[in-house]
Length: 184
Image (cartoon, rainbow, N blue to C red; front, top):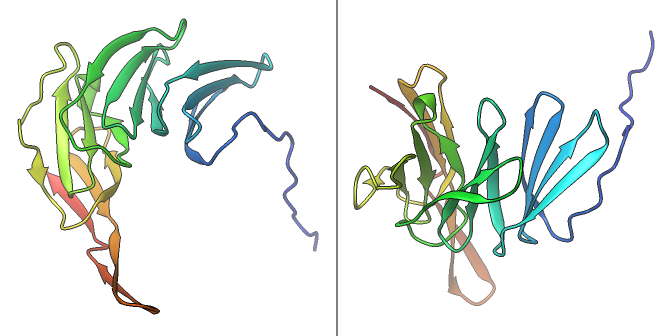
């Protein structure tokens, strides 16, 4: 019986702070970081494109064709970047600042993000208008994960817990800690 071990083939060291998300599309690796950068690595060509967002970045998601990037940052905005030149194509705002992740809605006609209050927000990609002006209250705690099924009829959300410090040296944990599956 042979031992199977994993060895790194390459180590990418450009980020100066925590990596917050990874996405892979074809030979491209998309990386977001709290250092305020989105980095696109072309693994076939050995090239890197480095886009400075200017705020800590929570997540990056390429479009299906890889021609645009959906980026969420901690100042509470989502941006749609042109993947070829780094220009901002659209800005989405309205949700609370925080550590939200963003995803593409069905058919990439909308973008969706969660916030620190447990709300889910959605915007139309073309005009950047909120679908619901107050978001939807889905969890009691911060939304930490979002995924859309490829058919667009189901979405999964996940939430975190909240640490409370009622007395010195006594840490308790109150948790929503749920995963919810939504359907149309």
